[in-house]
Image (tube, rainbow over all chains, first blue to last red):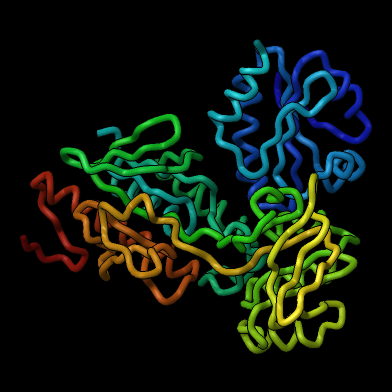
Length: 108
Length: 313
């Protein structure tokens, strides 16, 4: 599955009620490190396309309600949701291998 | 050897070195934990020759695509260690090892922490060292900037346009930034100045809730965000056994970018230079790459032709 776009509107159905774990990349256009992280996340989305996991991004500027609800105070922040709950969090540009390992471990 | 040259760092010096090394047909890898370094988070650059005005990220994006276009490979991996091996060096990263005949160290400086209780725990939860990234998330909130130099003053000005309440705290009795900026901040009534004080503790459970300002007296200030702008340090402990560092931990390099270890070159802000500027780093990076090229050819017994034409050696 390619990288998804999450919004305040679809967050409940796409993330919280998802049957599979979801990685959400909270980002904004003004943020330099987010632009660095973006290709890393896209690559993970591609590499894990055949796995039961969703990968997507949420623009914090356009979706302030969800971002505030989860207390996003630094971007990029990555939250991993499973069964509607946050099970993992990474702040800052992630290491590609570490991020993929985290997601893979949730699949078992 | 996996590569001819490995460049550690992906800011102006590292990417420029990547352009020059790959254009000399060296098999080049750039290992970097971020892309564009400090320059990428600088909102406005007006002094890069040939470019009137640019956003730091856009300029670094051009450096990156130019390096890749000429054949440099870039991987977002942080280097943790280095070891001398026969005919070159081995670099350690969290999951792999990479070897090269020559290495260019161009990983710049790292923002310094305050080193107070609560800071580490609340990083990313209200404690930030990137005002251009995280500042806009503090719309209508209360924030404090720690520091008294240009970066701190810029941060306070930037936040004054976004946040509801802006404080700046600096341990000396006068800010040390450039005069124009200091005057601007001193005149800005939106910015509350706390001179002769410093943050001694940051409080909060899930997120920042307050800081203690310590001076001749002590005051607890309710706050939502702490922006740390107290300068930079050289993160070079992993190199101390292999090359010479100065008192601040910066790498000592000569005017040819040679460090004390043959085959190890250095360029940019991590070097013991007086000025930390994008154009200087870019130039030094180019120089380091050409010196590495020369070093590799020399060690392989190939002829070295200097730029001015005549041959010696």
